[in-house]
Length: 436
Image 1 (tube, helix red, strand yellow):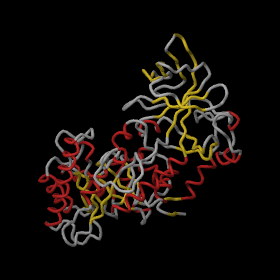
Image 2 (cartoon, helix red, strand yellow):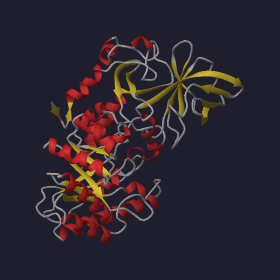
Image 3 (cartoon, helix red, strand yellow):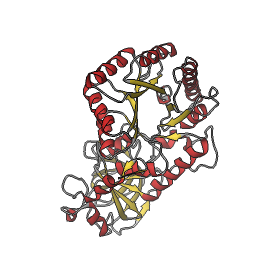
Image 4 (cartoon, one colour):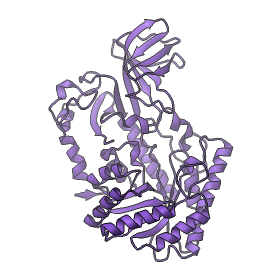
């Protein structure tokens, strides 16, 4: 059964999975029960038997972020295909699709297979796909399900040749939709010049097993901060994407298409992408502008707090409300070996550290009350594999106390957890299953 672009029965069936030792942090009393049976007991984080460290998600923040992004995209005339690699959580995909997302974005074949296992109907594969085995699986999946909509990138003549050769050899009956990707010198994938991109588009048109349906890019590779120079570089890159679309349209490459997909937009500059992709196009060109922002759902207390358009002045300011961080990690103080230092039960296996270190925000002491930590009273000095080094300069946590941390960069938080509690206050109202 499919609704809003995903198999809702497959998603609901995740509540039938049994909890056991495979899922870190879960209460031992829940072992052997299904997720649904456990949730029916209305467990709480601190009295429900959970063990630390533990990642939790805030229900209100998730719902706020879903509504805010959906409303903003609708108001500004863009579609959203959020990048699923951020969470790899079909339950969250379902919520994003229910809030109007156009599809879900994937980056590799293993992710694609997870999406299809849960019946995601429209997938934007934001990468090149040249693996023969992956293409054979894709061709079978397209043949099996006529409702499955898929497109991926091409950025070289060799890539076009490999795709066409593999699909023809496998006897694919449906052509694979492709987008010519335009990159930038020194950046990631994508043709480096518009001339190269036009040549690649010509090669696609010569292969009946491929169909050219648009142009793709990624502005996050041309800028890495929010300085005026960085924002200007993003604008310049997006203008080149627009020029390529117009040139290909003028050469007749999109003739006969009901939709021409033009996609860009990570989570840092999607305001500029929306502005660029919704400016007037050549008359009669049916452009569908698609953002791929994925970080908005969880937001964070570091990387995206600074870079997200909703956390700073941006181009298309209006009625939007800032995103809220939805992640919190809880870790217990296990040692106070010397003055000014506490060691906690959380490490690199539990929390992200590639962009910013965890941010201590609240403390839960022996009395069970949760209190804000005064600003500047402590900071994470380092993370080891299984330890947090908390440097103290005013705070005085005791062995046994719990510290709640804000986290940075959700993409490298979620891949460390396979079953994540969603909380409303202290009550656990859902468990989110991930598939990394």
